Length: 310
Image (cartoon, rainbow, N blue to C red; front, side):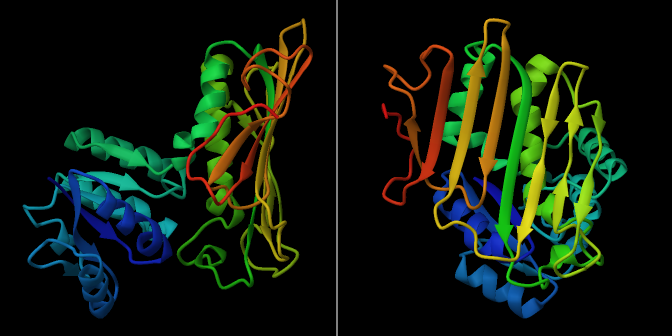
């Protein structure tokens, strides 16, 4: 049994990570770190933490536990690097919520420390495990879509006010970029890196015109690989109610010159899904002449991707 500690007791830990640990065979919630001893104890009790001493307010004390095998870092972004390095030096495996760190230097330090300690390091980019994304990624890698030249990923999230901790410089560095933009960048690299190489240049424009705080409410980050490929990454913290129905649309245009453009539009929350082919093909990934498109639409009656003809 793999014993894992949760560092942080916020919304993601409460609603996603602890339930996931409870539902996964071979692992268990072992202990919990929080600034508040009462909250650590309450969280550990409610989620069935298995350690004889499950609640901690000190990371140094938590990682001394010889029964602990790894940690899940689910604290605010600016705490990730120090906590990951402390855990790795104690010989604990590390799984970090995105973004991994708040600078390239911090990220490189985390990687180096985990390699030196011979522990496993992972970052929580869960969209790579989405059934629809994997279907399209497989098609890209099989060459079914031709040579990728352009990809646009857009995602917005609803924020009722500026009270989110990511809007504060004390514990966060970015708002929209850290909340959803980092997922968009990861999708760009996942889809395009195998054929187009690594991102070589990034420029960005940000806006904070609604609440006028220190961090980005809207960000657009054009990226470039070699001279033939371009990627666009717009992300938004929405101050108004978004569309009630979520949609992720891939518009895939294939031409005889093997140019291919992929456009991803994700206006709000993205689960669960129904996968529908928008062209009348035998399957959604068959050739449909000069134009193909795949639509992933929210459907609360199903928890797995379905493929069918439109």
